[in-house]
Length: 356
Ligand SMILES: Nc1nc2c(ncn2[C@@H]2O[C@H](COP(=O)(O)OP(=O)(O)OP(=O)(O)O)[C@@H](O)[C@H]2O)c(=O)[nH]1
Ligand SMILES: [Zn+2]
Image 1 (tube, rainbow, N blue to C red):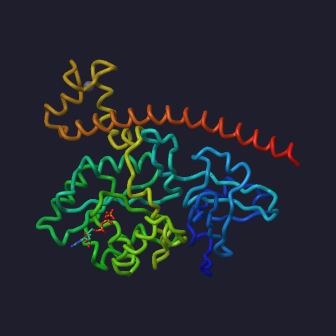
Image 2 (cartoon, rainbow, N blue to C red):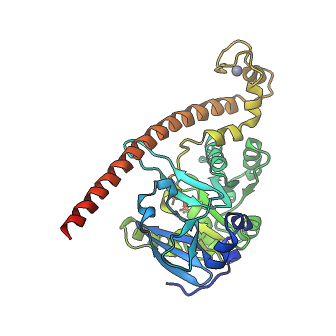
Image 3 (cartoon, protein in one colour):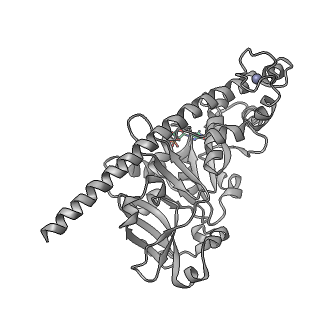
């Protein structure tokens, strides 16, 4: 266990969390931030240092959404018999249920920045960037677009402009992930206590960015990932990594495999201009595909709307709506599974009670 001590501000505490606490809470407890989750055991960071906590009682019965995940803030009472509380999250990245797996997976809570990473080469794809931006919006995290491999590209500026045209209010940073200069380029989002994560396709440079910010060699991450694959006990540093300047990088395993999921809200926010325009279509139930009086298609005709954006909007909406239907069905399935599990537990307890 590390012996480092950090103040609450250094751990990423936001004053807004105070609003969830009473005077009584403040006098009788203290804050702890979840740095790692291993099944029913949490590793938390407090002002007094690192500590392990076992989840018991109500926490074992909680739905996946209510269970603490990396980045969560807990309130621990001095009276150990008083159950801890989880403070309401400012943001939450989760992987939605898929296929036969009814269990949504929480990836990270209370992130300040999601770096959406692509590179100035064949990986660059505006629709893929849009997908990640929608995901960030629906998770409640501010996105920043990072385009790597500028050093291998003839015209990085052209890539910057294409990325910026997706959303003018989301910052775009073009860089060489191997260059120490990225600390300066990303400094607005690396302030002490800020929490961030990198998402993007395989090979775009997410590990390289973390390594350069950490000032370490590529080799180190490779070793860590081999350990993870074998399911060995992981330490705090693997899930919540502190950068030399004091920002925290979330590197939870699921972060690399994020899918759009039921981010319908995020898609609407990303395409708010198209939503507004759709309000001017002649028919309320316009499909924007050859319908009479479609305002979106008229805008494309008039050269005011990029056809690619309209296609992406319609595609992402179809995708998220399908996912949110599935997520709803999975939630129902999970709820009835939870009921069954609780009944089995009660029966078990009753039986062991009789045996005593
Ligand atoms: N020249 C150059 N090479 C880069 C840059 N960013 C990443 N690379 C190289 O691209 C390769 C892939 O980078 P990674 O950092 O492993 O990519 P990743 O996104 O972590 O990939 P996954 O772990 O598969 O998700 C490595 O060989 C890096 O050295 C860059 O900006 N410039
Ligand atoms: Zn229309």
